[in-house]
Image (cartoon, rainbow, N blue to C red; front, side, top):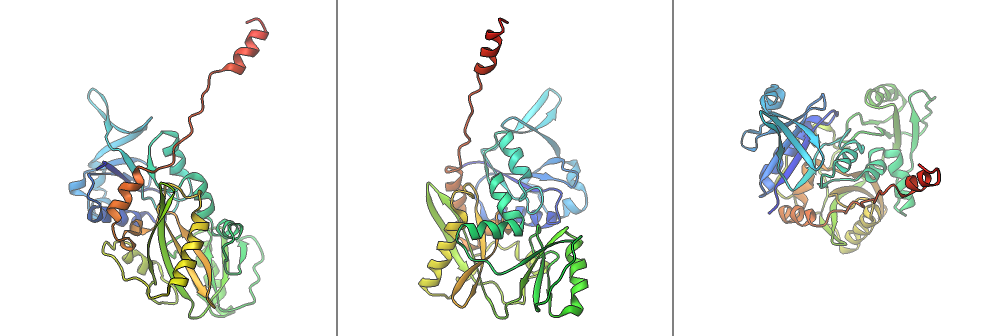
Length: 345
């Protein structure tokens, strides 16, 4: 069984959620684990698996741990006689929000030839920004709710209420408000723009059915989780989702028929296609009048959506053997040498 590194933390509004998700991995993975924490200054620390608790981060005690730096093919710490590599086989990107889901760390991991489970740069591009996600989904023949897109410097005209206002680049329901009439609009806009410069405005559909489906692709075959119907609230706010992210026991399967299950899976396949290869993602869908609509893509879901799978440990280990292969470009300076030869140099 491979030795896995868990990368978490970093500079993000979802920093603390990432810590909760990382600690949950101790309960659901049987592999030997190595924990790599990125603090708010984007410095790396090796956190001993035997001592990892949420308290060491809030107290700053993590700074007593070995500091790491990046090298080709991995991480290393400094010692008396040079650098010491941090040994692991595959890394799991468990950094939620900025850095982890916007492509920053994906690019770094690719640059340093570190094999990892998580969204690649192109997957981050289409899933991090809700406006881009909607465009991507529509081009994949997946329905989305009607929406308006605004920048904070624009004049904002919203005539249809109730509606939902969302920052475009945040997860975990941060900055989201349900606006029932125009008297609530200014406060909701202020809340959303506190987190982001752009917003998405969608109609609020009363009693909409919502279903979550996670999955990945291994050796060209899609592996799906069970379908979950989240707890029915107007929407799941940050506190509810935060408490939910440390789940490690499987949830109950939604009571839906085979036809709807197939529709959800078909839409998941369209979204995942080849763009999200190497990642375990969760798609959140709405169902309105028996039609399926994509709500959002979670390229690094809380606690990796382990609670939706029958055998999450096997899923992860199988995926480590089916990661996308990076194309190695042969650089031989043939063109430069021809120029030099032609100049007689």
